[in-house]
Length: 419
Image 1: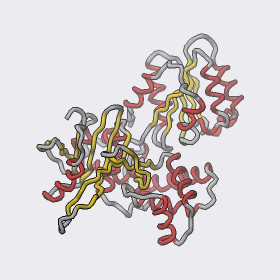
Image 2 (image 1 turned 60 degrees about the vertical axis):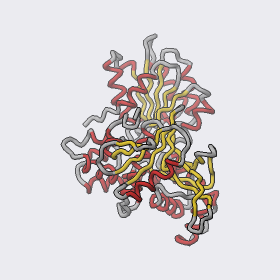
Image 3 (image 1 turned 180 degrees about the vertical axis):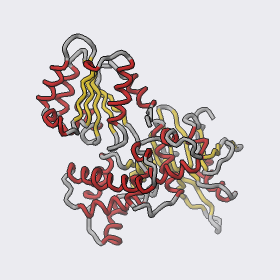
Image 4 (image 1 turned 45 degrees about the vertical axis):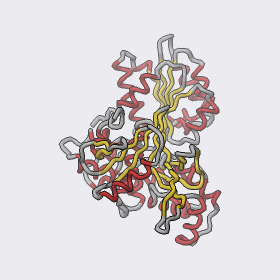
């Protein structure tokens, strides 16, 4: 089955012929190669571009090992350009080539060459876009399938069944197309062990494999929970009986982020308008990978739903912070104390901001008031939304707080726009 990935194709099309390198990044096996060599290539051929005008180099293919040499690769590219027609260069897994920056910068000097590359490591790519290409590169971050993209592969399947499968096995395209639970289980576990883990350890020259895997287990178990380096250090000592420095832990976390396996969300003081660096949350870019790491043992739907909502918001282009609101709370003795209460997601995109709470259920008045409490203590006019698991009609209370069901939120890409 062809999964169109229309959002990403449209972005590639909008960046054609802009005299910049188009760099597609994302976790391994999320569909970067398919997007470039199938979906985008089909667009080119349907637009009248001949096969001789498309230069394809898949560096992960052993047959192209000689093209990992930067000088040979550049000569190969130049030799393919026979005339003044428009040519398109598609290179897969560019980080396998040393000095790839020089090759790409040389390609920019060829007037009739439009260049697109993929890569699976942000250390080699996204961080270098700013410093190396100095405004001459565009990064397109490809995520695993959104729920709607995933839902397209599940014809005649109810929302509830598709949702349960999505938060269990995630949105890696190949896994989504597998039929049985056994096939999905085996694929994800083998992928984690033979591709992700080996790749991270070898690329970053990590020798403490056991300590690294323990951190991976800790982060997997604690998605959506506040943590910090000192807390992780203490967890190593108390639960694993290992002494690991905070610098090493920080390095391990950066390796996981550079491989696009996890993303960090920082705390933000909404009233004070400042970041608080003492604690963070981590979310997995794909829940199937997270669950396979834990052998599908820890299935807390409240946390999985929160992670899935986070991924959906990131797919829609929002940057996400954890909101903190300070309030004065009256005690039984009549005295007041200052207390911090949390907003799950402070979502920013340009000048737009939305506050969102992920609430598995607000079945009782007490639970509903608990979820609304931090939102009621924000003194601005930005939209405030609670997403609940229940299939309900969207409603707005007298304070402007909107409550909507998960199905409406996640199946409608415009669900939080103009409400």
